[in-house]
Length: 244
Ligand SMILES: C[S@@+](CC[C@H](N)C(=O)[O-])C[C@H]1O[C@@H](n2cnc3c(N)ncnc32)[C@H](O)[C@@H]1O
Figure 1 (cartoon, helix red, strand yellow):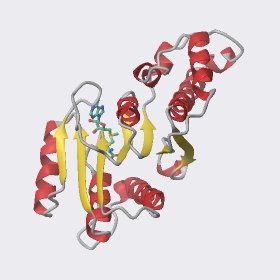
Figure 2 (cartoon, helix red, strand yellow; figure 1 turned 180 degrees about the horizontal axis):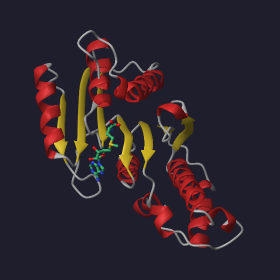
Figure 3 (cartoon, protein in one colour; figure 1 turned 135 degrees about the vertical axis):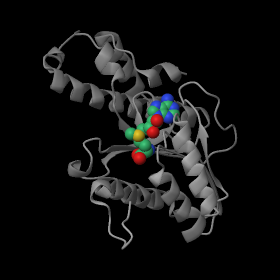
Figure 4 (tube, protein in one colour; figure 1 turned 90 degrees about the vertical axis):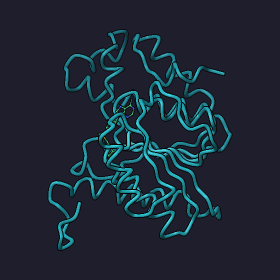
């Protein structure tokens, strides 16, 4: 991400902005907690710029006993990330090859789940993992929300929004993230949906920031289910987390 004279590589500038802001938001989210250990899972970590900086923040800057696992489909990228973690002596940081929509993942107590642009339904599986284990903190920036767009059909007063491909794509992405927020609320999370960086640094700039409080918001999930019924789409998180 940096040149030898410590300038930001031009092509990496947007990613630099994203991960800095992401870590700032994580830091704000946990600032009042006195814990001296933390366990984090990163779903779809890719080259893991975020994963490394999170490890640095908690383990080095805050001196906490830190364990982070990054999951990704790509074996070569995972191997490279493990080499770099070893080179820095980051012994609490490891990367595993996994398809998060299918494979068995860590079964220990996790304090935080993060996703940054994990593709399509990989985000739903990350959220479902967190909900099922009542993980306290979730910071999730979705991307490539194709599932609803591919399955939705006309069914009511919002049909006009489905007339033109580009509008349909954007509406379906927003609908997907609204449903995710609703499912989280129905499962006992307080949820904020925020613009985590300016649009110029990523068109996929919405973050679902959620904290488990145990207080279930009634009504949100039901509204999501009613829309699914009316417009006939498939949405993985609604399926993965059945109504209680
Ligand atoms: C757009 S990249 C983002 C990488 C990184 N989080 C970042 O923001 O720089 C999405 C990553 O998710 C991974 N991915 C997509 N689907 C996945 C799945 N089902 N299981 C694990 N990783 C997945 C891809 O291999 C890719 O590395």
